[in-house]
Amino acid sequence: MTRSDSCARILLAEDDPAIQKVALAMLQRLGYEADAVNNGLEVLQALKRQRYALVLMDIVMPKMDGIAATKEIRRRFPASELPKIVAFTAYVHTDVKKKCLEAGMDGYIVKPVKKEELEAILMKYLGGPVPSRLRETRAKSHLPAR
View 1: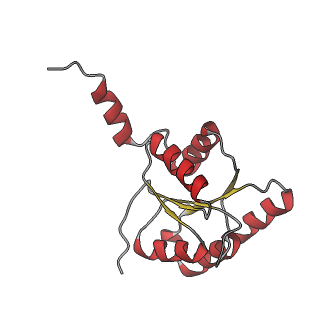
View 2: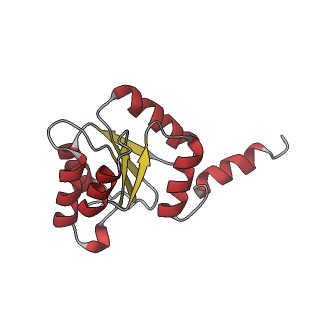
């Protein structure tokens, strides 16, 4: 299957429905398009169908955890198609962070995530403060009515 391009699309890998809902809403409020999956196997399937610029990867998930999924992504996909992968976890121990980075993750963010921390990660890995379509929507909302 051909993977379609999307320069700022985000994949959220999170098995907790409540955390998924909050994170997706936060990403949407920040102007990003995001999809969610429940485990590492679903991450691999999603990456076959769609190109993502960033994966927010939980560490502990059923079927395949975030560490194994990251290693598999790095093994399966050519460098030109690799998304940035950021650990999205409640674990704050330095040994867990080290394992994430050794597995091939690019960054690390601790849950519960604050809006400012998420914005900083998105700016760092996606290279811009706010997607252009959101800036355009905000600008249009300030235009006088005709």
